[in-house]
Image (cartoon, rainbow, N blue to C red):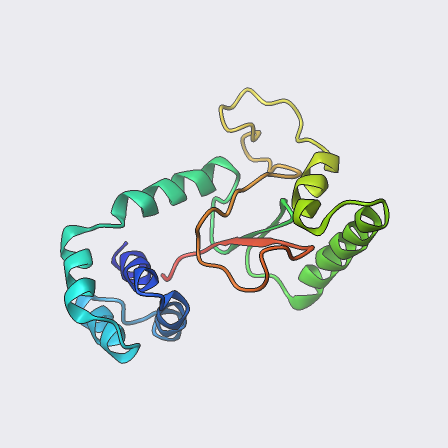
Length: 175
């Protein structure tokens, strides 16, 4: 939890990805003194960072994100959703390439039919095969991953253009 809090404290200062990379490089040393050292190394304002850490400013947001991930079938890390399509666990590049190539082909078809770039993700999910009916409140059958899931990234840290034809959402942790 502390590593995630440190990442979000860095995000508040516009340095999420620098802290993210530092945390992943040092997964065996995520104790508080190490986190503080990484914060210093990436150039955070240490007073703001330490206040955020001591007050646990991002704990409820992190817990909410974790519950949201579990609700859509992200029961382990890493879990990826490529345009809403689940890809679970550490996967080789060809597994990603296959799904992404299919999603790009589908996005190109939607664009040819007149879908505006900023509406691609919505159109992709609208045309996705819905998961089967389920008695569970999350809509996910116990033990069965959903076929497609809509996940709003909101103001979460991201890389790349907001109007990319393929969106990859990753649920991961540092440990």
